[in-house]
Image (spheres, rainbow, N blue to C red):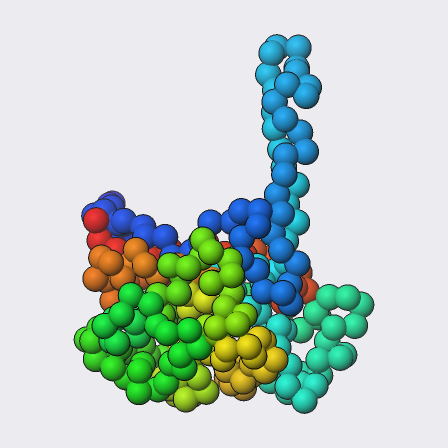
Amino acid sequence: MTRPQDPLLSAVAGGVRLIELGQPFFTGMPCSPNHPGFRMTLIRRHGDMRRPDGGSAANEIIVTGGHVGTHIDALSHVSHDGKLHGDVDAAEAQQGGVFRTHGAENLPGLLRRAVLLDVAAVHGVPTLEPGYGVTAEDLDAAAKRAGTEPGAGDVALIRTGWARNFGDTVSYMGKETGVPGATTSAAEWLAARGVVATGADTTAYEQIPAGAGHAVLPVHRILLVESGIFIMEHLNLEAVAEEGVHEFVFVLAPLRIVGGTGSPVRPLAAVSA
């Protein structure tokens, strides 16, 4: 007896195209001063050792912080008044040098509906102004432009256009000029809709005023600590925006780093071929 094919397999068989939503990892890429930067070098090159049959191999060593490049924050990443999400005592949870609660090994794989909230397009600009604060009203307008808004269990991606600056570390980090990003009203808008995760195309996700650096991060508190919503940073939403795709299947598989506070990721948008 022939079994009916799983609907998901049928959809894949019909043709699916993947659009990259992340940045490449390379030595010297932009990195928050709060984290150790990404470094990679070959520690064994072809020809350093040749096998009797003529074969050779090369391999590398990678050193990186868990919040460098395109990544996702675990719920252990931020505390407020000594508490992690769910009223977990942060000091107790981190004893022994790893998190015994909310560690990165608990980050879920995601195969979810995603909505692109293109705030830069709402304002008719390729890139929002440095230090611009994305508000709940901006997200409302972006959802109306997309013809849909994120709901419970969905992924919400905010485009500021800032990924265009990724090749220029000084501009991208915006230490003197500031960096656009979500304000507390935008975070509350997302939390009210029950999204499982949200991401943006900047280093800190939230608004960084000129000269302020990462002194305070209230949006992280609202999303991670109060709402249990995962945050993704350093996304590249230019390709999906250029194709006019506003709603798609979002694919993500974090590394299971036991006791960690985040994980490098390669997010993908799956769309019909």
